[in-house]
Image: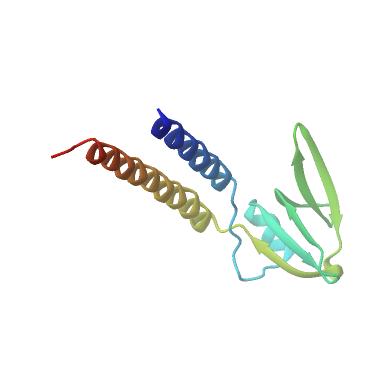
Length: 130
């Protein structure tokens, strides 16, 4: 019974980690212009000259003004972005983000299975006496 509780705790921790990894976003190292960011229609990380980091769902251009769009639950908020205040603009790297989400999840699941099998084998061998 004690082994089952230990395994369930391990599974719960690992599943929590998998869920957290699903929300990870990897950004490209190369910086782009706001115009390119608005055309890409992907997540964007913006670093200002005073080293503030802002993350947006996407960048849009309306009436020659760039806006960073964020989704807060059901609300959409738009923040005007001044091009002269920016140091870096990074786009989401879709392939690396997907690889991290899937690869990390697979590694964790394989680890869980390995630990469960190892624990089961130890419990089985401890019950055998000669």
